[in-house]
Image 1 (cartoon, helix red, strand yellow):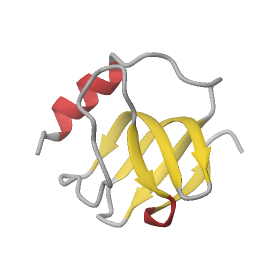
Image 2 (tube, rainbow, N blue to C red; image 1 turned 90 degrees about the vertical axis):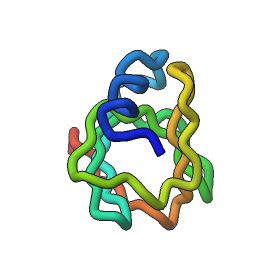
Image 3 (cartoon, rainbow, N blue to C red; image 1 turned 90 degrees about the horizontal axis):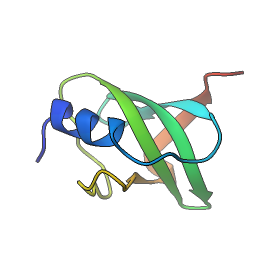
Image 4 (tube, rainbow, N blue to C red; image 1 turned 60 degrees about the horizontal axis):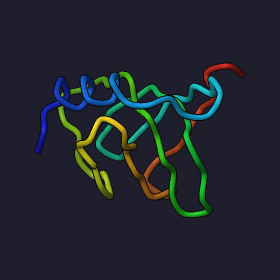
Length: 85
């Protein structure tokens, strides 16, 4: 598994996503991530993450380690809070 610094660097270089809709994600592993919400599906979120907190990233349904891709999470794995609210 890639470490947090590697993931952060990859996603900092990722392509732009929709608007400036920043949200904070709380994962089951108690890792907080801040990023832009790229797309919503009833069961899955696609997220461009630009900041991580914590030491371990686990429970991702998939992590695609290409700079132009997004982290994909199942909807029941996270809860979101809109940082602009």
